[in-house]
Amino acid sequence: MADAHTAHSGESHGSVGSYLTGFVIAVLLTAAAFGVVMAHSFSPTGTIVAISVLAAVQVVVHLVFFLHMNGSSEQRWNVMAFAFTVMSVLILIGGTLFIMHDTAINMMSR
Image (cartoon, rainbow, N blue to C red; front, side, top):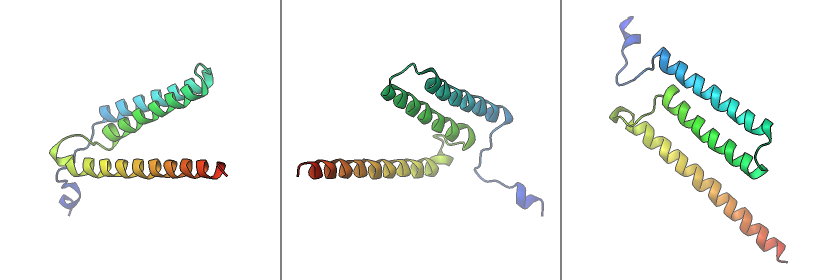
């Protein structure tokens, strides 16, 4: 009965060290984002870009250190599903922004 709970095929669990490394990096990235906003060292556009870059790096940190996504053959379907999700979201957001911009231009011309 106890063997049913311990059998994991193809799953890679992280060590305490990798979880702590991911946690420390995530905390540093969060502190950096707060620091960018509180320091007012960038223009508003620069601040948005800096926060966006820090957020994207933090997503990658979470995927690698906490969700254990990598390029191994065991993770290939997870990486493909994630890539499809990202592509779908980018198409959805890009299409929405294009339609909203086009509608605003057409409405302002009248």
